[in-house]
Length: 68
Image (cartoon, rainbow, N blue to C red):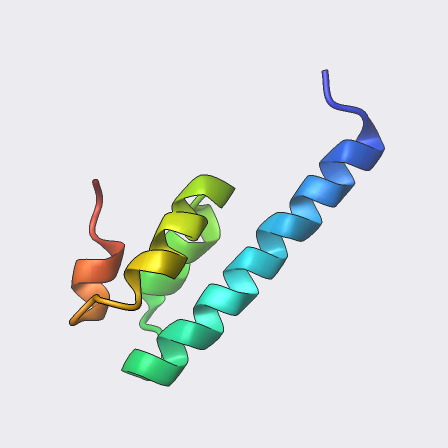
């Protein structure tokens, strides 16, 4: 079971990964539509890391955030 401090740190990592990816998406594709914001908010850390790498070659927001 994860201690409070570990959960707090993990939550911070998650939020930072979301913030950085959101910034990358906005720079490349413009403002996020509601559906994309929802996907970003619901994604776990591993998925956010995958998307952070995939954005380099993605040709659209839909392609980047499509379900796997």
